[in-house]
Length: 81
View 1: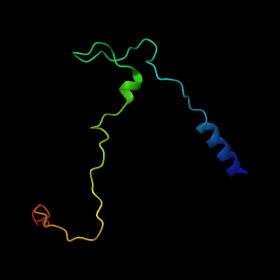
View 2 (view 1 turned 45 degrees about the vertical axis):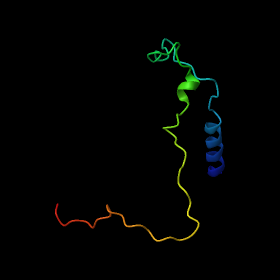
View 3 (view 1 turned 60 degrees about the vertical axis):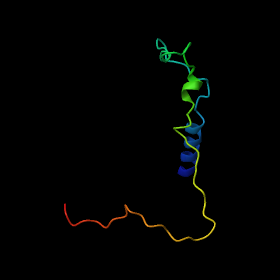
């Protein structure tokens, strides 16, 4: 019985999200336009991530086992502290 009540509570909390478009709070404005730009950015444009914040992977997957190259920075730990 408790599991049923807990799962019903969880579903009720999960379903109470709002899906309205974002807008500034009452009395607030969007940030000023950057120098050289004509108008202010809109909220959806400000939320988009640029290519530097989410870069594409450039890792080439290996097809078969290969010997690792010597790493000059793979040094053993020192005894000094």
